[in-house]
Every structure is written in structure tokens, then in C-alpha cells.
Length: 178
Image (cartoon, rainbow, N blue to C red; front, top):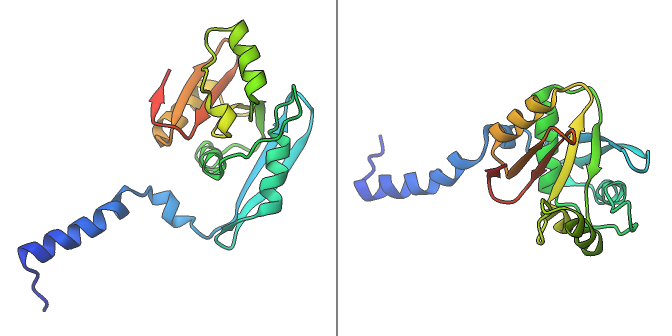
């Protein structure tokens, strides 16, 4: 039997601590395929895509997703953070949805963001939409407050609840809620 000194025990504990911070679902699905289904409410486009397979993100699938989630006002295509897609995948799995994510707003160009800011005080000047790290969504078969509650429980970024506009904002920024 190997005996650890106090120093050895503390070193082993410190090495293992980051692993404890990884969500259980992240390790369990590290190599399993990940799929998402989208419906862009502004363009009418739909996309069913396997964006992660064999332990890697799929470049063609990411490009198709970037295109679907483009700024519908300008046509500008941004790069969507794969962690945002993983967050959506987690929300779909947790809610058990059988419907596509209805997209209200994905990537937002700086010009569009500025235009929206001029019309509403609720639009951030440094919106994570401009970095491809935020999305405004709803699901046809999941109550909006349930989607919000699941997003809050996942604790993977910001969650905004807009029942009057019928959407939930999720992002991969710091954990916060409004």
C-alpha cells in the first residue's frame, strides 16, 4: 500500500480539483456526437446539424451554423462560439425538447447593435451577440419560464428572461441573470 505524505496528498488534491469543477455531463459526452436543430424566425431557414463528432467540432457544420445565425438585418456572418452551441445542446438535452430552437437573434453586427441601442436602453454597447457568444431563443414545446430555469441551473453564462417579448437570452459570458 502506498502512503502519501501530507504534502503528497495536498498535491494530489490540487491536481484533481480542476476535474471536480468540470460538469459531469461534459465528461460523459466528450466524444459523443452533438446535434442541434434551429429555425431562424426572421429568414424562415431551418438547420439540423451534427456540429461535433468523434471528439471534434465539424468545420462545415460550424460554417452552416454561423450562416444560419447571421445578422439577418445586414447579412453579416459572425463566428459563433462553439461553447454557445454546447450550451444549447445541454439545454435541449435537459429540457427534453423535440422541437428546434427558434432563433430571435444570434450574431449581431456592430452596426445593428448600435441601431438597436438607439431604439432601446436594454441593449448593451458591448453585447456578446457581436462576439458570437449570445443568442436569444425559445422552444415550441418548453414553457419559457422552464427554459429560463434550466439555463439558470446550468450556470454556464448569462441568462436574460424576456417574457413580454417571448424569449430567453443565453450567453457564454460570466454567470449572471436579469
